[in-house]
Amino acid sequence: MPKTSYSKPMVGATGETGSWRTFDPVVDYDECNRCRTCWLHCPEAVISLDEDGTPHTDYDYCKGCGICAQVCPKQCIEMVRTDERKRRTGEV
Amino acid sequence: MKTELMSANYAAARSVISARVEVVAAYPITPATTVPEQIALLNEDGFYTGQFIRVESEHSAIFACIGASSTGARAFTATSSNGLLLMDEGLHWAAAARLPIVINNINRSVSPSWNIHVTHDDSYSKRDTGWIQFYVSSVDELYHTIIQSFKLAEDERVLMPVMINSDGFVLSHTLSSFDYLEPEEVDKFLPPYSPPHWIMDPANPVSHGNIVFPEYYQEFRYMMHEGTQNALKVYEEVEKDYKNLFGKYFGGPIDCYKCDDAEVVFTSQGSIAAEAKDAVDELRDEGYRVGNARVRMIRPFPVDKIRELGSHVKGFASFDRGVSYGFGGPVANDIRASMYHTKYRPMIKSYIGGLGGRDMTVTDIKEVIKDTYKAVESGDLGPEETWHDLME
Image (cartoon, rainbow over all chains, first blue to last red; front, side, top):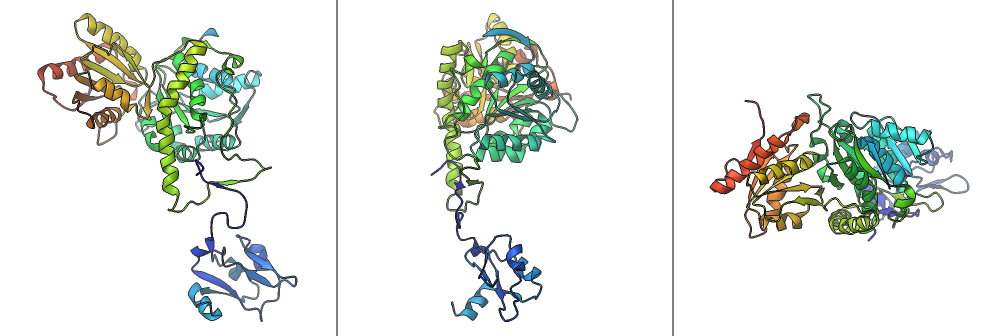
């Protein structure tokens, strides 16, 4: 072990910090106008964009802060309890 | 080497040149002020060629040193009392980040009551931060101990920061001779610092201070404990080298004087410990078999040396110029704890006094030693804690 903790830059240098989350952002893609505001404001940079601007949240690292939902001009991002989201997507 | 006549603070400022310190960040506070003031002047005149950073507080001073040390630079600061207390968060940080920063803390009473004279409460309260702690008794010892401390702190087996404590005014503002070493001379002893693990370098980025969950945190703390304990052995090597190169030796973690055949030894930290030599000499003339054990290092605590002393003396008169409120003299209690797991049971009497700069003269010290001597002779321990010269 090193004498003190440090990490080299890489995805998830400190583990899957998404496990802290209580509420997950869920985008209503029918309402979303691909404006990229959520992508711009995400403090963890875990929102990636398709070429047309469609946002996708990386749930391995999203901490569930809800900023994306707050700034969304269309108010089409809903914060949903993690287990509820997983039920909706059939993950559990 | 050349002999100079200066105050301890002026000498401390010179040690920064001798040790080729690269960054000094400091904020003025009496009685430490003349350390950074001198360094600033030496910087202006081109004698100190490192960076001198003027910061807005002691909190910033220690964090500037942390930043500097993180890049692999040798860093130093000086402070006192409330200034040291303001650094607290950074002191813990520096130790856990394993950054070999060196501080000269000029011991000053903590307020209130407002008092600029010596009490060891400021540094005693930082005992458990992880910093190695020295207490010195002369200008010469301060100057050379600072240089030695960089070698000790930067050793890979240790890699912990060091605080050298010197008594406010008694040492800080009192002129005495010391032997100055040119940086070219010190080069033989102290190579440039080369961090053995991570460094902050934009060309090879790492992040430090990241989250460590319960699975690993405890192990990092254990390694700090190990590094600090290693300091006793490493300091022995450091002192040996230093003595060979420059002929200077200050007595290891506990500097013993006439202890070999002593029945009672007086222990203390800082300038009192130098005064105590005279007290011991006078008492010897009066027929008392007493010695002086000057405690130079309180963390790591020199347990083995205490046990060796405790195996042949009948009593310790342990003097603390500071208090752990509710449990008395910190060093006295450490001596008691050190003796517990041995078969020896010398009397260990704790004395507290000299607070707020109250003078501890040879007469005072003799009184303390005689009190323990009386307890040893009568076999009656008496009070386990005595406040010396306390008004009714």
